[in-house]
Length: 114
Length: 112
Image (cartoon, rainbow over all chains, first blue to last red; front, top):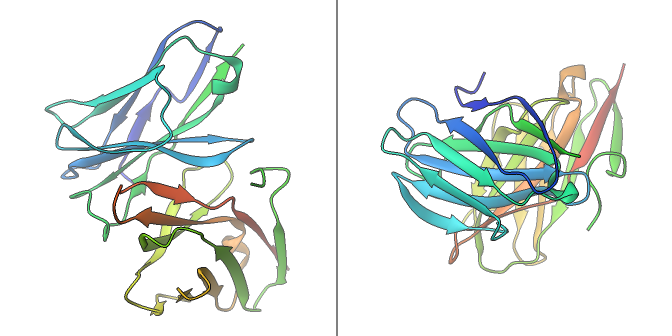
């Protein structure tokens, strides 16, 4: 158990809908990362937050957005969902979000868009 | 790139042998590299990392080698055990954008 929690574990929804994925980092970690893992493209970095501020942006679509709240939990919002958005979404956390730190991954949210 | 899952390259090794998993990267601006292990149904788990100013780093039963000249990273696992069976990913971090780029992964199968 990494100490990172993600909810829900599974999510099934329809095209065009909007969903919110939630992540609670390890106690004391200030930085949160979001990743998408699909069969087609492997593990893709989406976005990183540090203490509420966006720090780095990866291959995140405009239909997706994220934020980190004052209590340091983070949410990833996916809207206008398409079939291709079906994937595992992982959250990871690290203490300061610097390059020398270990990232601890949560168990993931499996999203299925029908 | 290659797909994860059914189309992953696979390395099969006998239990007790050493395993070497390779990764090529292309970004000259990457200054930090990580190896992750992902077991079925779980999130990636950190194994070992290395900064670009190093060429070798050792952990417990694992060693990472970095060759910046040819942009190559390898993970060596000594005395491979059944519990090492998993998919292994390398990742690089761009020093300018802080973006992380992951390799496609290699599936390691340990034969008893």
